[in-house]
Image 1 (cartoon, rainbow, N blue to C red):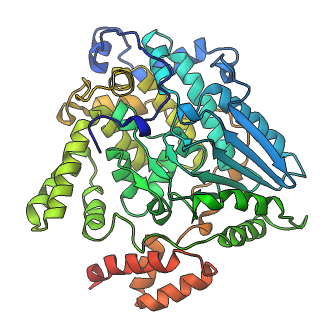
Image 2 (tube, rainbow, N blue to C red; image 1 turned 135 degrees about the vertical axis):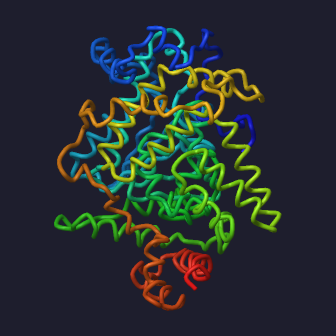
Image 3 (cartoon, one colour; image 1 turned 180 degrees about the vertical axis):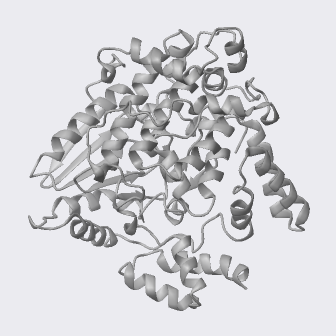
Length: 499
């Protein structure tokens, strides 16, 4: 990825034009000089939030555009369209509030059978309004950023635990906060226009919106790789790697919506029975896949799983250097060099905190993930790297590396990282839905996507042939497009390692 974030794929809204500049003091220095209490920066930040939070945290963004979310209905279909195309549908508080209110209404409606969330223009949603957040932080008002994140994560949790069939059209740029609005839906449709990324370490932040839940559950170490490098997945690769559950051409989405509006479910149908009907309906619009393999495959994919399984960022860099030295393959050498340079370009504290959060997130349930991300986000809002990164990348559009603090991965100390996790495991976020079903540790609708690497590997270890595994999953997935290609790619990649 280029050293500066491209205009077309930033995190984003860049509607604000400036951020008040203030000298940025390193976190550890602020603690030592008494600006922050030595007993725990994150704990104090939490107490400050609880004492000073607004009386209406869900109304933190005062501006309100009545048309930033468009609502339409036809028969049993209800559509929610993000409508800020000039800002690539970047999510703000006004949009989040409207989505929450409408989703809560629809959850109680007997007439609403299927809910679709989509974006206007060339983006689904390119992220959150991080420039506004950085502006508040620079003005000494990080509590407003805290309130924004609380609202966003409550919305994302509502989507992740929704009681109606929910479909996200990931048609176009789907990054950061836009991933949070789509990744937790049972049905996620990618098209040839889809561009996925979690670019938070580029701006001195960490992947959240439930990323600590979904990234560690991706195949192998792909989630770790995408999080630390901000690498993009495009088109059908978003489907192959499980970010999407289906892939169809964008031109068929309007017709699919018409077809979905005609669906009727029996009153006694179970959620899985309803999901199966929707899956078969989407399958009617399959037009084949543009490639039989993802772009990340073979030796590079093996190198990702090997290098990014390390415990610390410096160990990952060491593994990348060893991989570069051990291979004669020039493409692997070039990939390793690029990846090392990319990680070195990112916020060191952002990279270190991200890796810790992903490792811990493997054991978090969906509710814990959002609650813990909120605590970590609060610390970032009071750390200089976030304001520095947003100002450099999204406001000034600088092509030079931001002035991170600390400025190298070698300079990141364990205490620096620990400070971001001092406030986790607190029950400080009240969701719109509750109960044991809202605290799952694996997506209950994961069966709608392609088989995972792990599921395929189990069959290989049982001694089954590639054709046998293909046949088994084709039957299990009702002939789903992409199953054959996914199984064959995994078998090709893993069988040599199994002897």
